[in-house]
Image: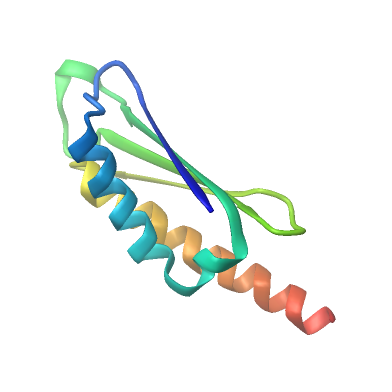
Length: 105
């Protein structure tokens, strides 16, 4: 399973940041991670230099095996909080979708 992390020009995507986001996503997705083929994380500073309370947006797209891609977005004050929130939302979405899929079988 591959985790790809993308940042916009306003977020410095160094190795430390990528490792921290990768760990947050893996922790946030928990047990559903084993059913995914790829996860893409997109980090964006919505207001650039202006700042603000919820100006960091994290969009996470997951590609589950045998299903359509699923994505969630979360805005928060910093990168770690935005990634944590988006991963939590995605885990809840995927648990629901996997539950529906498993019941059909």
